[in-house]
Amino acid sequence: MPPRSPLPRRHGLNAAWVRTPDRGRGEWPTMGAWLRDRLPERVEVGAMLAEGRFVYDDLRPVGEGDRYTPHTFVWFHRELREEPVVPGELHVVHQDERLVVVDKPAFLATIPRGKHVQQSVVVRLREQLGLPELSPLHRLDRVTSGLVMLATERRWRGPHQLLFEHRRVRKTYRALAPYRPGLELPTTVRNHLRKEPGVWQAEVVPGAPVNAETLVELESRIDGDDLDAGDDSDDGLAVYRLTPRTGRTHQLRLHLLGLGIPIVDDPLYPEVGDMLVDDFRRPLQLLACELAFTDPVDGTERRFETVRRLPLVSAG
Image 1 (tube, rainbow, N blue to C red):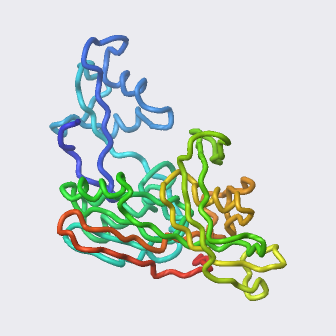
Image 2: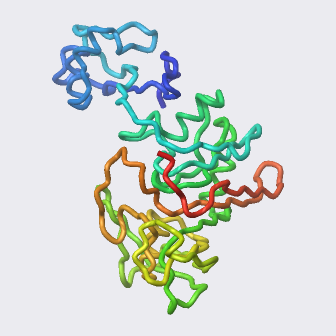
Image 3: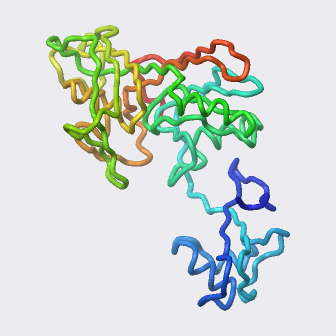
């Protein structure tokens, strides 16, 4: 673990750090040479050194010609791209000493990552609520809307994190998808799902041990003539209630696809569509609508519900 950062948070984000190897000088005569070799090409190391934006633990700027020294921490703030504001309100549905539960819009990432940093639940809420240690206890896909639960401080993260790890949180979703008259519901889908790093779609692996399970129920029908949501079915659409008993990547999307009822406006299934990072026009019609559990600290029964309803409409 690194020591405490000498730099304050910026935009709700901790400073980044890198550390020189424990032994030897190797091929780096200076700290500047090591930073150029260590950091990706997209980092403007020369300009950042000249501007004093790399610092040591004592806040001294790292110099271009500083002699290379082993086991040395260097701190800096990442450059952030200009991010279009994700439309839609981030509703705080509950807040107490230990927990914050929010209802996020589609296209808002849960954690800062890649091209989505400032436009993430964590970064927005740390600033909005003044909670610098706020951290998520689970995640939703960026394109999925609904409930996310976060711990207010590090000391509360452990006991609540175990709820999710041990599957003690009862999660419920709703999805808008084509109505299929011949489909017998309720039904439980069980199979093996696999998601390879760097590949957009996950896949079903026939014959492999079951690692994904979802209860699918029909909740209500919607007349296709009353809804402009990309419906091509003569039978209209329906709202399905989904109760996952596992949490594999893209599990709900693949399980409905396998039943012949792909979720409306899914950019990945059945086919990968044109996914422009800042196109917010057609939200995935999947909503994380309920979280329920027994509180591990005080033993009370907790239940939180979304304030959103299907169909989800673009707020842009």
